[in-house]
Image 1: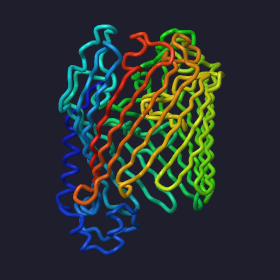
Image 2: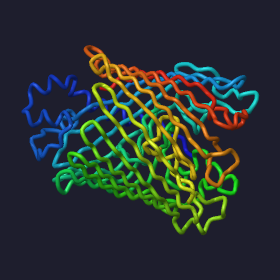
Image 3: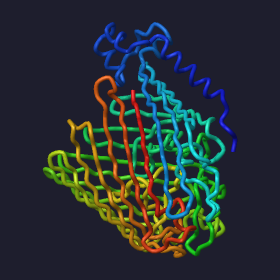
Image 4: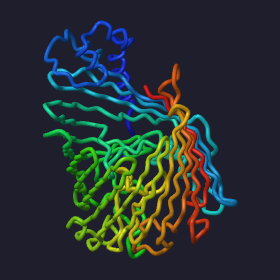
Length: 477
């Protein structure tokens, strides 16, 4: 793996300076533009095919957006196990040019540095392991790196045409149930490839993509798929053998075809993913809305690619006989300022449901922060939740509770990461500022998780039986 060089950061800063110089105030510019051009500034794809006097103006009439974020996290492990805390500061700046003959250019950079922490690399005396969650604020692939944490997040060209667009480069992908940014740390998942959106008729949306490079969440480097899958912990094979598929899968990328349709009462989405040389995954969601009620159903199934048979047992990502299969349902009720929901998910005993942790996280109805289905089969999950808005909708509070039934330690056939059945509670408090501080959010998230059966130190350390506090200040512009 090769360390990202500084010249990319300098290139990005130069690009942003070029955009900022003629645009000291977006409001000032809008006073001198026609309504159509003003719409362009706030993000509409215009059909202007001339009228620009210079390349400088092309950038000056674009948009600048981004965020600044401070993230404090502390994890308090059970008993005498070591505790950790850290505070990270960073942000992102995105520049999007004026559209010219249907074309648009975009670039974004993201940076992070450590404000303070205890020694995240000091081992716990009992287990010999170090911090997990707090390291995810920085670089999980270089545990000594707390300052050189910049990344070229986006660098793309997009072409708009009637009822669609096509984008190539380092891009912000559409959110999907499996491939997603998951922007819950300092650096989200980032992807490079081709993304095509098309709306042939109203309320029908098609998405087609090919992703061939990825920068996983909480990292700073970019990787081909051959070297990306397996950067996260690889877990175990169904017979208990440690998985060793890293750099053995020969995967060139991920292909996706998606379709979405909605009416006044019904929402439908269908996705087909093909992870080259690894597996096929099909996903379907159907939701029905009636007055204050929403009923949803999700189903997903996986099949191994034939290439997996050619690999040694321990080098396979998925075994040829595995058929990961999941059914998830949710009922949601909205009244006044309240939302309440209950969800149930069943992972069948036909195999483990698998999704590379370098590409995003699953969004089944029972998934909540710090809890995912990936790696489980023959498992049942129940999640209950409630959310309330008050203070003129500026203050939001939510409570979620989830419980897994079925997983057992050292029962690897349906338990890739050797986790115990557990229960978890998340409490969130979010305040959105107004007036001079409009755009700023302050979020406190408290997480409590504990195993239902096994509380051995090697099983629970940084995985369960902990209290965690996350305090995030985010300013978006």
